[in-house]
Length: 320
Ligand code: DGY
Image (cartoon, rainbow, N blue to C red; front, top):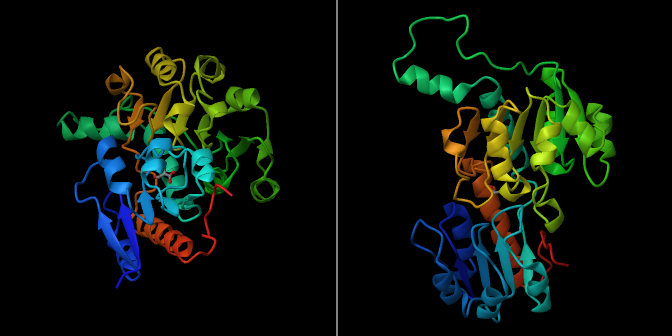
């Protein structure tokens, strides 16, 4: 007889569900879509634990509807979708899935960087459209990567993994964060610099910062003006850290060279004009989307839930 009742707000890789089923009665949202607000409020009621996603807004009303729940295990490293204080006030544990998606996310940032620098997406579209008439000396000229300056905002797990992968490209590394990362500096020679210097000197600027009240619109019109006209901006963190309207303006006016975005300010909505630009690559928030990583994220969330239900400290508890 299963002891606990767990709700999973959207289908995730099966091994996580099976792990939970060893000890719990598990209900999974059977629709392949985000639950409506009304559905979320209804479904969390009476559960011992909820496995939720970054697309679920877990606020006071949801936490109150889940009265009696011990834990909300977020299937993401970021947890800006959850009101942590409200959860703490109600004695509900919140956990995330750090570490397992670090390299996967860093790899996608590199994929975006190269895609924009070498104009991979428009070149592919051009070729598929049957417009390739032979090698052309002026066809899809891009930007070199080797030997350039890479600027990283956020020297934490993902930012430093992204920076370490620059080694083979002999890049100069600059980084900026609220605190230094001595291990990252020692391993890569990265220089800890101010925000302004990073923006002015980098050929590529990649964002690896959490979304907090103080990082909303961390990159806006003023910051974009500091960047080189040949610079490329990459964002795999959270959309609202960029003022998307200002970015569309900068890309449209070519005051920067390009951008690669995996996340958007009002996801899944895109800023007006974004899809008309040929100097931006836009992806549907897939930085952690590999089979292995999404499976690990699920297993990690499941272990957090099982620990909390057993009365133990979940390994990835964030609202201590
Ligand atoms: C995270 O874990 O925060 C990612 O954005 C999910 O892909």
